[in-house]
Length: 69
Image 1 (cartoon, rainbow, N blue to C red):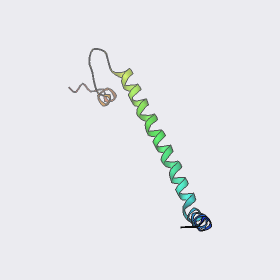
Image 2 (cartoon, rainbow, N blue to C red; image 1 turned 30 degrees about the horizontal axis):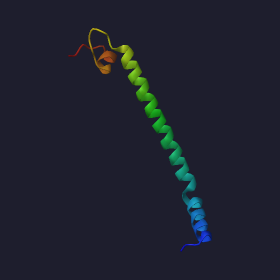
Image 3 (cartoon, rainbow, N blue to C red; image 1 turned 90 degrees about the vertical axis):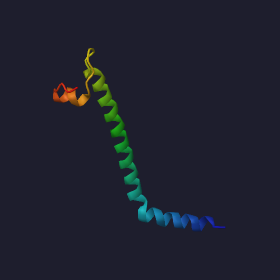
Image 4 (cartoon, one colour; image 1 turned 90 degrees about the horizontal axis):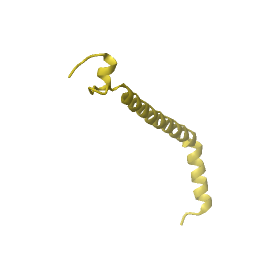
């Protein structure tokens, strides 16, 4: 059985070596995830507004102004 003091010491060594970089990577991952989902919801909202009622076009076609079928 591992004693609590050995476990605490090994955890402290791990945190001292890698704790801050892992926290920074975690924060960056969360920020990127939030940004991704925010952008995708924004793009879908813009696509809903930009599609004409009589004819359905892709967002790329609308942005480029081409009438490619």
